Length: 95
Image 1 (cartoon, rainbow, N blue to C red):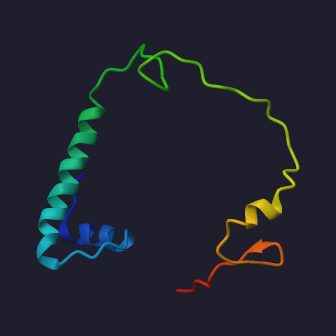
Image 2 (cartoon, helix red, strand yellow):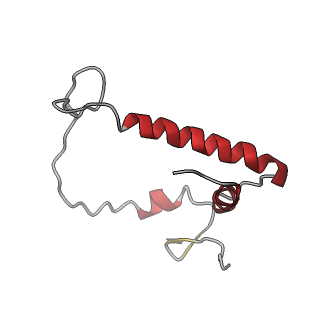
Image 3 (cartoon, rainbow, N blue to C red):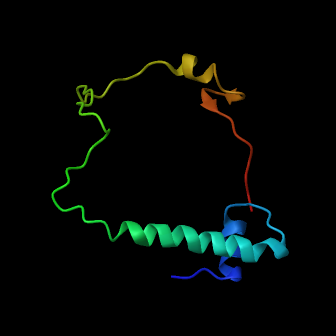
C-alpha cells in the first residue's frame, strides 16, 4: 500500500493537524516509511510464541466481576468543571 499526497492531506485533516501544502510530500513519505515497518512485522515468525503482558513473567491481579451501585455521584461530579442536575454539563457540539 502506498500513500499519496491526497491521502496524506486527508489523514491530516481527519487528525485535525494543519499541514502546509509544501510539507505534504514529506508527510506522505513518512507514512509510507511507517507502513513499510508494519509490513516487515508481518514477516516475523511468531508460531509457538505465547502472548505476554510484560517481558518479565507475572500474573495480572484479578478481582471478582460483581456489579456495584457505586453511590458516589457527588464525589464524581465534584471533579467536573460544570455539573447540572446531577449530570456532567458539556458544550453543545454541532458540525
